[in-house]
Length: 577
Image 1 (tube, rainbow, N blue to C red):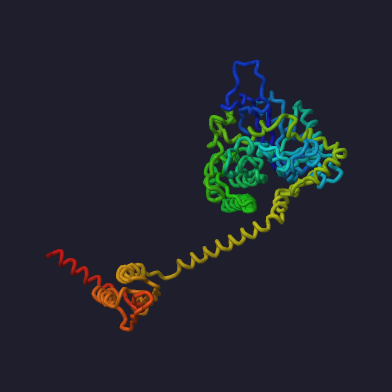
Image 2: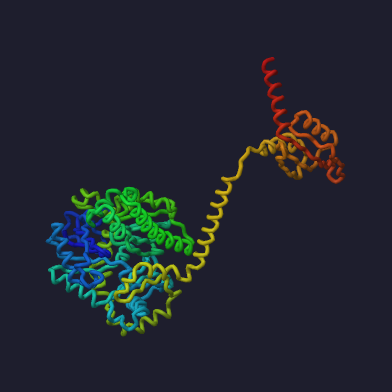
């Protein structure tokens, strides 16, 4: 193995080793037999990944620290011990994956410009949160553009990420003290954006990707290769594992194995009723967050999601796909591995990972992360050299003047260790953005209408039901009356059930002449389905040469049943003769 990827959750670490297995040509195979050919830095590489190892972080080990983030040496030691447990002590290069809620970050819009100006603008966005202390932060940015056009006026969405430079330096030093090289600190969101631009096929449609693993749940929406929305939530696994550990008296590692085997249906096997309620609450809270945010965005942008893809470790536990199908967020819900084809560079589980039932798609995000830049790109160890912020200040101000619609789309800025505030702070800021007010109003109106319809349906089920003959009456009216008139003006049907079901039908229209009216009246009497009231009027219309007719016909259930019985008897008699 060449590298180890480290993810940090509240109560544990998740470490996954990987190694390069081939160059990513269009067919996903390595170049062979051509030693003179220069490697294309833009070519994707295929990687083989080990089974992830979960390393619990005991409170006793943290001592007075609230998180392993505050003790880089402890973090490095845990990774070192984990590699030994995995029999990968030879690995030296470490990549630290961080989530947006663990960073200071801000999304914004700008026009295309020189790299120096755009970098200055990213630093300027972070300065809005940390002031002149920005020189103490490492800053990077990632734009959502597909670079298909080079129009200066094109509006681009970007996101700036920052972390204290002192923390990055301490992390590098902490790993070095255990003979490990921390070569990259990269936001997982950078891999999501890269996937939208390069991997997920979204031409002429809108797709969503939900990446779920042991450290986070990430959601992005893309259309025509351009991300429209990207947001991250803390993984519910941490809380769910606590419930499983208490309910079944298991260790953290054993609880994860149990979760992966039983799938989402495990909640029905809880030994305590309170455990099942806790699981339901955790899942519902997360799903409410995801569904609420996705619907806000789709309604604000006036788009609907055609396909939704699930990826990474938790996407492959039993029953989870059907669980997402029930939310109705997209026309089609698929696993990301269902889209792999001969042109895809597919991540490969190691033999041990395959034995542990991990799939190709379980490593989708990690494979994208390994390909989304060199060691100097998207790397918070180096950043954009924020110490030069002062010299770039004028450039940043010039960029602000030229920005089209420069504004904050979603704010997740947290100062230094502000990520301890948790997911709710980030979500509330996004949800309270005034640009979503109209969408929120529409969603509330839709929910009110849906509830009203449900109430009406429930009330309708309580009403008494009886069969009506209205359809038969209309058919007879059309056959016996309407087709024999020259033109038909209108009719009203009055239905009553006072003792017997009856219909009273006033009719009006034109008829050819008076003999035609007599013929119509006689045919009604002979058929017996309707009775024509004796009060009727027929008048000559000199302008049209026709006769105006106004009359009223009636029928009732008893009359119809008697008529039908007579007709049936006559038909049987004729058949016998």
